[in-house]
Image (cartoon, rainbow, N blue to C red; front, side):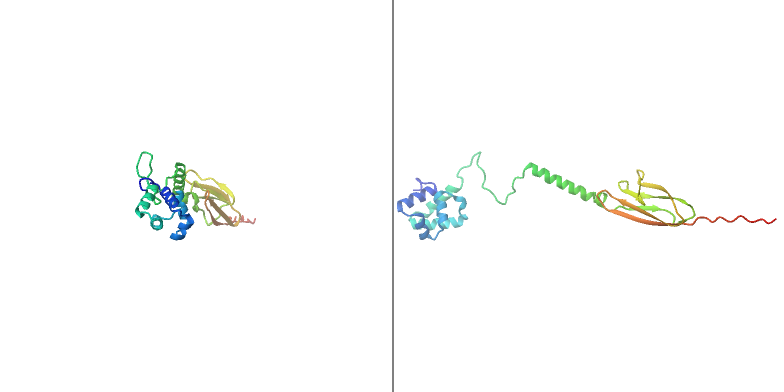
Length: 218
């Protein structure tokens, strides 16, 4: 029988026909689920459990049909495992091996990694909080003063709502006219895609008093 039927499906079909045993009867005699016997007979090996369980099932079937257990087990292995290797044969699938990744997916992943690395390296330049350094007097007797300071060139600076443009090194200078009393100057610095910082300075302007002309009596 081993030389005549090398396929497990052929062996089971022939022996069950010879013994006049149906799938239902074989299932009842062996306590093997009917679907597993159907899979063996039809050659549908993908729906079978792991090999140790199949081996136990085949030994029960061999005992019930009165055939050699080793013959049945060997025919199953011949049916499910490649016997020769060639140029077009593939190694058995390893579920723990790394799956092949498409080139397009690799490009996308690589691009995302580059972007995240760039953002992480330039986080403060893009999303950080800007700073400002301002120099001005706290009080003065001059109606017009010069306000100067430094910011990052990439940041946008406003003084009381008016945009001030620094030079290439980030230095800015602005002439401001004061009103008598306390003057409030509000500086705001906004970073592109980032946060905004504000700074409030106050300057007290006290005009110089003009001494009255002396009265000359004749």
